[in-house]
Length: 420
Image (tube, rainbow, N blue to C red):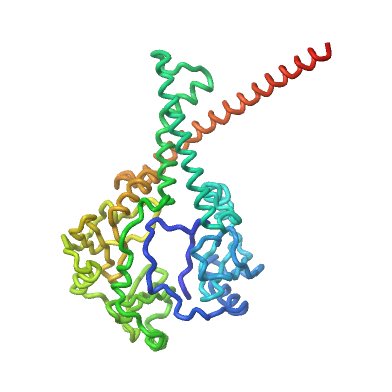
């Protein structure tokens, strides 16, 4: 059974990796009927729910709140199954491949409605229109950045009124002081959030065909068919939960994964084919495509661009790092166990790492990622943000009420004058 994805409603990863050619469908005409999907859901129930839960309901859907992202386009239509377990689990089975592509629990859905959905404006009807959703997110975040910067400017200008810490009193003073301190972080969050959308492609990287270069000439369907037949005869693959094709230099290989995280590279005959150390320089030469290599080394510790970030993502050590001597000092990271290309870092990706991962996630240095230090830091900043917005909302409501009372009083006087 294929490995399921457990993602939030935005379905976004942080690394923005290129699409792996090995993930492409081998047979686009494949369709899964309701009986096959139900059998898959029942088989997956112990792994998903932790119990032998019964199916409480099933439905064929195109998309819903949790599968609205483009990640699931090739899996539509989707079979949604609800289980009778205490966590109110729902599983989604791809109508094209039969794999479990997502599962959610009642708690996850509840907290996503309070967090990720409003944060990303991820409402189903809006998110279904990708270009419109993207424009709205970009322009609202730009407006938010402008208003935050304007608020900081006005807050600083108030010091011209005197030498006191704040010329205000009461709620206005608290809004002024809290805004001065935490408004800077609010501005960083809003601006970095805008950057996450890569507006107008200003952080668009170059390249992107490295995986195709590593794969080599496309293989025929018969090669995949014969290899899959050989794999089914290998008893050592029992318990495997994921199988991904990973051709290299025109030869067919597979990456097999087990629930405990074990990964094996298999050759076209279904036999274990661990990557040899001598193969890594050859892979580096392929992605370099004639460009000079500045350095290549097996790295056993994190660096600024390959690290276990606070948001998770693909990360493993050791890793084979290759740095080119081109203008962007492009870096490539290879998994030395399988030869898989894990990431490419160019000037655009460096900018994204510091302007988004750094500013938005408070993820600049390794010591800042230590838990619970990072949790306490982010919680403090979030409380400061609540203080800024909370006092601002209170003052705005109070001002509106005063204006309404003044308008009502003025109207009352005008009516009285007319009646007299």
